Amino acid sequence: AQKITQTQPGMFVQEKEAVTLDCTYDTSDQSYGLFWYKQPSSGEMIFLIYQGSYDEQNATEGRYSLNFQKARKSANLVISASQLGDSAMYFCAMRRASGGSYIPTFGRGTSLIVHP
Amino acid sequence: NAGVTQTPKFRILKIGQSMTLQCTQDMNHNYMYWYRQDPGMGLKLIYYSVGAGITDKGEVPNGYNVSRSTTEDFPLRLELAAPSQTSVYFCASRETSGRGGEQFFGPGTRLTVL
Image (cartoon, rainbow over all chains, first blue to last red):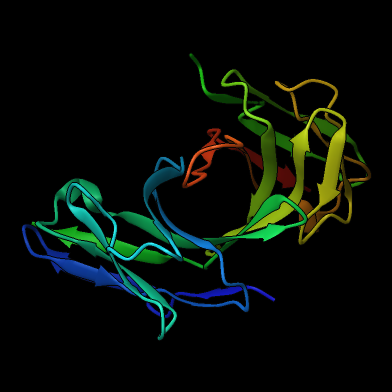
């Protein structure tokens, strides 16, 4: 069974500082994908970044980077230069292939609060 | 291009009532998903579809039904609503091709069963 673990229920960071949100996963698949989504207080889910299991380089998207350590099965999200608008819930997710379909599994999320 | 739209935004049901949550996407995506999000939790997959006429159960399908007669629409049916179905429901779609397969989410439907 696939499982995503986010051990930090809440994180606080000062504006303009960097923050790391932890995500570990459990899978027996060789091919899988890892995602991070942001959910602001308004409720919508916003895609941030993707990492494929065979990607050799860590993914980056603007201020977001994914610290992928395959042997440790971790996929931590790093947000550089935090902004007040980064305050939100952040969800780590993994997709696996099942008979040609892609079944996603989500973690419970981490609440990030950015202080001015 | 509206993306993924969901109706209604809010709904209060009485125990035992039924309703259909509507989901429509205009991106010609084959894959569509229904999730529920309980307070303080992540998303749990209810049902998904890989194309018109093809649906399959996710992690928490009991009490729900779906159909997919067109590529655009993926309605979720609640029969005999129960308080345990109080949740926020998200519909999502994704492309078949593409390296990542990110999902595009609708704005959600907040359902309360009393």
